[in-house]
Length: 109
Image 1: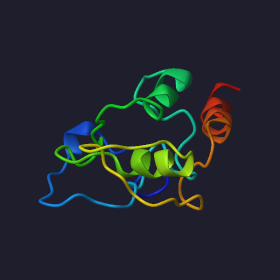
Image 2 (image 1 turned 90 degrees about the horizontal axis):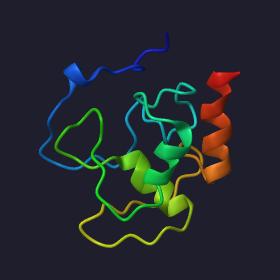
Image 3 (image 1 turned 135 degrees about the horizontal axis):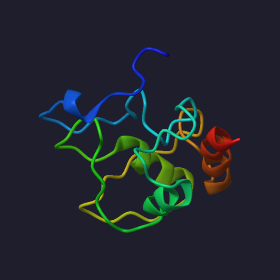
Image 4 (image 1 turned 180 degrees about the vertical axis):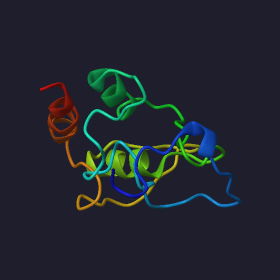
């Protein structure tokens, strides 16, 4: 198993400031484990990326998901406060919904 992957919710941390890079096993990262979505279906998880609601990080419990914020920038999704807004990064984070789907549906084959 790659180091820093499959972080259990029991290992959650708290932080005083918002992180601006995705966690090591964030589902929005290109190097995430295919299908690692916490029991949520791939298409349902992808819908999170296109909703206008706050979504917390699964590792840092009192902060928003940095990977999701970057994905929204990558896909030109408009973000209004209090949602986290981060700059594009198509190197670390998926750039399109199709990339996300193809990556995470690989686990079903």
